[in-house]
Image 1: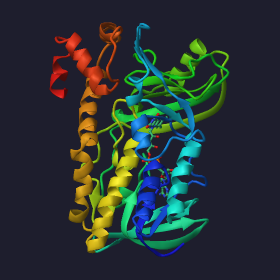
Image 2: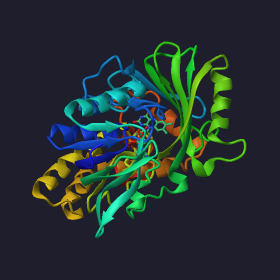
Image 3: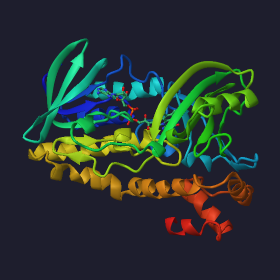
Length: 394
Ligand code: FAD
């Protein structure tokens, strides 16, 4: 490993991979380090991604797409179903990926473009001189070395320690940290082109339970509930096991993953002198769906576009990197995150009865587009009294 790069990326998830890939394509010297021994494993994700978001970065490839989704179903506590047909469901959930291969493909692209990639290599300490970040001390197989960089990108996911070491408050409020568990289940009767979302305080209090098709007779079946709502007999695993017993008693669980998903507001600021923070580390996960792959890639690309300009002028101060923070915050992504946080806060307070009424009010509607905005607009239209508080979020 060299001791000096233009850009050092910490974390080999989709955000870090796109950042390193973009940097290499721009002719910058880039180094990506990943603490785990393999990129993409274990998968801590339900692997759903919108088609448009994905194709903005890569041509879809059957090697890393498990299912091409045509329909989605939202199931209310009383069983009322909101059906979203082909063309409408794609805006939110289009493909179910195979992230073991998808994440590797992204890192492979970065490597092919010229980035240096090191697995089993973790950042253990920032190098800070006169208050400015100059890179990181990294550890690989018991050996430590300094890697200096003009810009260091923290892409270290939900656990993100690096930004905290640099003095940034990255706390996720406990009620905004989703405690997730997911089984990969085979030999079950499912619609192989449909993703299901189950709502309700019995099934998934203040969260949701998903069944995302991974092909014929196979699905990611998982749940996320706020860490603050878990307790004896009511852990995420307890809810999931009850659901499995009821819906898929003969299903075979061939993989089990746990993970946290931060559905809080984004960090107050995602840059400082020499530092940029992207993806889950920046807390840019959609607060309603918990989806963060797309935003991780978007922030990874935008961060490096700004970094490249800053490096070219020899000024990588916080002020020079600020267009990145302003860029995503003032764009559709930032506005959606803010709106969806407020929508989530509203919906988690609803009783099951109110949820059933709302579902019932839109159960037979043909949506022009399936998006959170379209859903909220329709709900307001049909329930003006009940959803008065959401009017400003239109
Ligand atoms: P990550 O993918 O988390 O990558 C961060 C990487 O940094 C990790 O590989 C980690 O090992 C590495 N790292 C950490 N610290 C260091 C260090 N010190 N040095 C070196 N490397 C380090 N999103 C969706 O869009 N769709 C879904 O269906 C979906 N389902 C989900 C289901 C579950 C159960 C969970 C937990 C999350 C889900 N998400 C989903 C969220 C999605 O997984 C994340 O938003 C996405 O992976 C974020 O990408 P990232 O690159 O920011 O971080």
